[in-house]
Length: 148
Image (tube, rainbow, N blue to C red; front, side, top):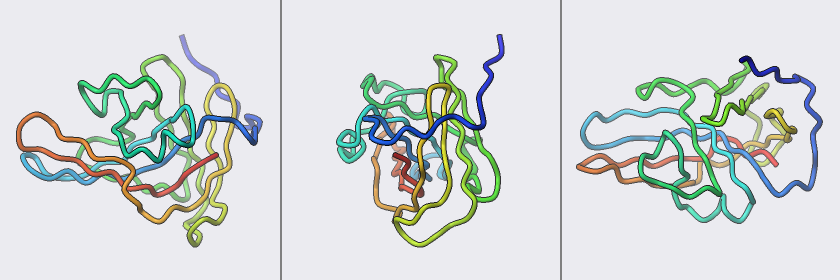
C-alpha cells in the first residue's frame, strides 16, 4: 500500500504538535553522526531534553515524541534546497521542504505529514536531547529547524 502525500497540505497554526529537524553527533564506539526528524505531541515536550521514542533510540517508550533517522547512521543530510522525507513505523510520512538557511528564528520553509503542515524556522543548534546507548556510545542531537 502506498501513502499519497499532498504537497499542499494545509498549514494549521496553533496546533499542539510540532516537528524538528536535528543533527546528532555520536561518540564512543562507532563514532559519527546522522540526521533525524522528530515529531512531538506538544511544544513543552520538545523542550524537555528527554529522548524521543522510535527506531532512532532503542528502548525509549515515550509515545509523546517519535524520532526517525533520515539518512544512514553515518551521514548528515543537507536540509536546504531539497525535499526530504522519512516514513514512521505507523506509515505516516514526514516531509521537510527547507529553501535555505536564514538567520535564527526566521522563516525557512515548510514541513507536512499525512495530516497537516507546519511553518519551519531556523534554530540555533541548541541541544534537543541526549541518548546513551548500552555500552560506550552516546548521542547528542542539535536543533537545526523547528516547525510549528
